[in-house]
View 1: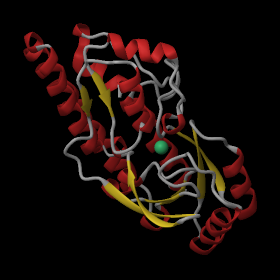
View 2 (view 1 turned 30 degrees about the vertical axis):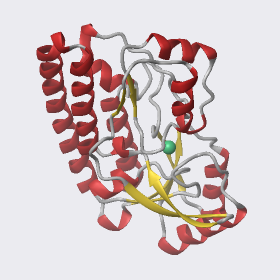
View 3 (view 1 turned 180 degrees about the vertical axis):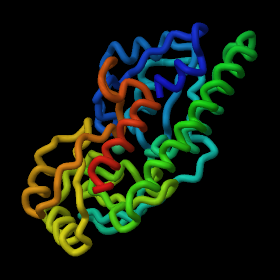
View 4 (view 1 turned 45 degrees about the vertical axis):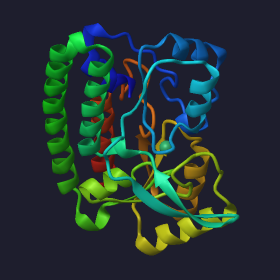
Length: 265
Ligand code: ZN
């Protein structure tokens, strides 16, 4: 989100991220420094869709006066039925940025949010957004070409948590995860057993690690099923600067390279 805001804001904005590289935004614990950053901000951008549950409390606690822009406004949320100890419930999937089309909506909302607090920058924000949207169109083409290169019966992937639902729906790939759309709850032994049976039955070729998740669970599942480890995906956070996924566009390119490397065969 910080990278998208930087692309639209350009030189007119100074961007501070609360959750840094490889951080887990689902279970982040805000610091007193974060509250000070919020109190000093002119505008606050959040993903919404329940991703940053801690953010609402932090905005209140920090006495932030800045408008809070929900960048996922206008996208169609993906609803998932999840099983919990207390029964089944409908969870909203927050990971809309994994669909480039939805990321384009984020960019439009960011542009409008910046113009609202800095009307003098309207032309700059508009031009920056337009230039970046062209890059996102090119990126989406690359994603489609990459997925088309994978045989249809091999477009099946296991990830630690359910972060790729929007990607799967947009580009035609099945993702299965032992954890739900958040990383808050550890998967039960029953969840893991169910995934192992599913991998064997559906002959799912590869399981993937995520930069924000503990690799041990996927190591265990790979070991018990004979599926290969397809590499590390960047799901909810970018890499360090200079790493393989330092920007949104690099993240998407990195992930499709991992998919094709593991699945084209
Ligand atoms: Zn996530």
